[in-house]
Length: 317
Ligand SMILES: Cc1cc2nc3c(=O)[nH]c(=O)nc-3n(C[C@H](O)[C@H](O)[C@H](O)COP(=O)(O)OP(=O)(O)OC[C@H]3O[C@@H](n4cnc5c(N)ncnc54)[C@H](O)[C@@H]3O)c2cc1C
Image (cartoon, rainbow, N blue to C red; front, side):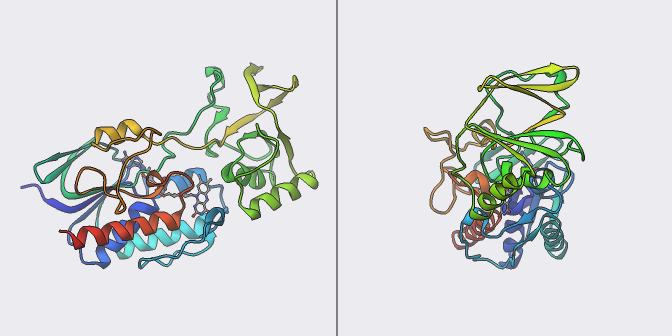
């Protein structure tokens, strides 16, 4: 007979890993984590530049960790190593390369359906982040430039002339890092940065002042064309520039369709609804991490959500 897990955790990022560790620490017996990538922490792997600094108090948000995880400032690599060690020392069932497609509650039991299998659980924690579906610009992007217009840094190589688009911490951190090996321009439609943490704000102006990169602020992109296989970018100031590659870092979208399929209700702002314990209107179905914040999530916030949820489940079982 198929096992019914105490908890199925969907997503192997900080929220999911946090839940694994806390569930083990607090004595939950049967735990399954399902991750669609071939390894845990796909957001950190795909969207963080190599050697990127990882701040615990990301974007200046001071977070006191509540659970057992001792996450600290580090780099992309040290953070991934730490999460490796957490998963290694907390032996649980885990399935990779498996995307959860829906969650349905039948009586008191959840049926979790992936691309390849089905699982049963008493509780489900959804920690799928928001980066699976990056935001895209309104204008049309030529299909012929598909390889040269990206939404993460996977395809960037050294020496390319790059345009980064966006005004948040991700865009600025990409620009700073890439400018060490590339000719980089950062384009933001507003005149100044108003969402940056202090370190990024200081660094971007320093790098600009030292001409390590170029800022194009206060203008938007009108259109993009293919010019001999390269990316011709037409700006609203009437000028154009040709780049080897354009990378958009304009945030991610909450995967609403998936959440709806799981029975999670969505509010007028398009955000999932949950209570102070991160429990959706379906009892036993929880949301953690980036999908459970209005804006500006972080690793430490995701870890605290997980701690809170596991405690709530155990107190109310
Ligand atoms: C460029 C960049 C830099 C950042 N720098 C920092 C920093 O320095 N410090 C900091 O604290 N935070 C930083 N953040 C934010 C931080 O990465 C996120 O807040 C954190 O990763 C959120 O964790 P999460 O578990 O909610 O989601 P994610 O980390 O996005 O993990 C979600 C996981 O779920 C998987 N998944 C998605 N859908 C499914 C599905 N249907 N089935 C199965 N698996 C699924 C994904 O593959 C992924 O592995 C940064 C973010 C970015 C983009």
